[in-house]
Amino acid sequence: MKSLTVELSGRSYEIKIGSGLLAQCGELIGAVTDAQMLAVVTDSNVAPLYLEAVEKSLTAAGFSTVSVIFPAGESSKNIQTLNMLYERFAQAGLTRGDGVVALGGGVTGDLAGFAAATMFRGIDFIQIPTTLLAQVDSSVGGKTAIDLPQGKNLVGAFYQPKLVLADIDCLKTLTQRTVCDGMAEVIKYGMIADETLFSLLEGMGGIDDLPKYWKQVICICCDIKRAVVAEDEHDTGRRGILNFGHTLGHAYELAYHYETYTHGEGVAAGMVKMLEVEEKQGKNAAQLKARLLALLKKFRLPVKIECTMEAYRAAIGLDKKAKGDMINVIEVETLGHAEIVSMKKDVLFALLEA
Ligand code: GLY
Image 1 (tube, rainbow, N blue to C red):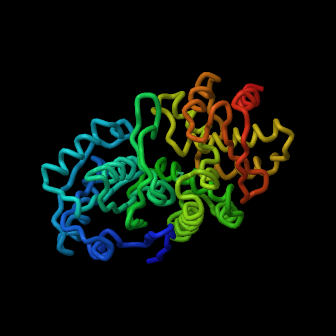
Image 2 (tube, rainbow, N blue to C red):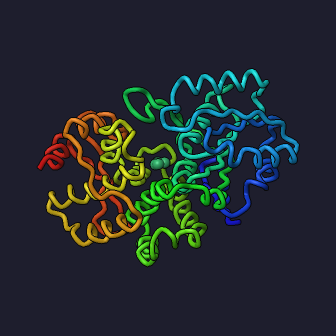
Image 3 (cartoon, rainbow, N blue to C red):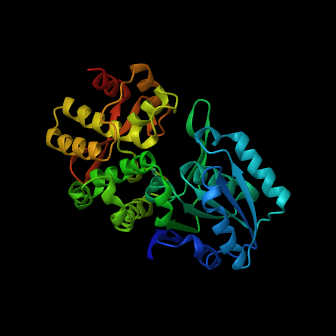
């Protein structure tokens, strides 16, 4: 098991990455919380696979548990499911000294995290991410949220977990598409911060090669995220680089009503489009684009998604990196180095339309 520490002012927490962590979760969680009861929040896909093992370990460690299962999918990340969680927590007798465990992917972590942030004005929260995307990105850094009909993640809070347990054994049950979804974020880390990671991915034969690299790859990604979050916990500056490809990626997700493309697929095509935007500004991104395209194709991710200007405008309008008529875009000109560039929204629209 590998441990990384997220150092925040006055607080810090561990990300533990390894095999067999679900069976040890009771003991590991017991070391970071005084809670007596833990509410385990999970979805209808993950519950049949891993809930029993988690409950068993928590019970053996002396916790009482209440499990809350919601229907899997982004469409559950809403105020109704959140309300259901609050009611189930209250019915079970959860107190201010107790805690919430998120067992699942990004939707579960976001939803359970926001419930933990707001129940009794904040109770202990533990992340057990079970997808690659959640292990390398969403479980680390304290972003929690629910969606509104108008857009994703529009209501939320920064609320750091007390512990993140990334059990790489959980990745064995993922579909290939879900693995590839997470690989888009892994490739993004290479693009924005780590040329060596990018080269490691380039050296792999393909998806079948991935399992022997899981621990190494997840540790590298979490280490990058850990450092960025430690520098800018509340996303007012440098943390923006983690959103490379995301503004345009959100437009693709939105344009197809979150039904056709996964988040990672949107980010993949968004990174390529962003390099094209750079080229249109006269920057030299041709070689980098060729390397990115090859890597995305290897991990079965889309390199282009058709999108109307209307969808681009809608997504950019909702983007949390926008202020007034300006937006911060993330550019990568040299592999492993991202820059935050402030640009007029109209300039970005014109570059996208050209
Ligand atoms: N997923 C981007 C961030 O945590 O800031």
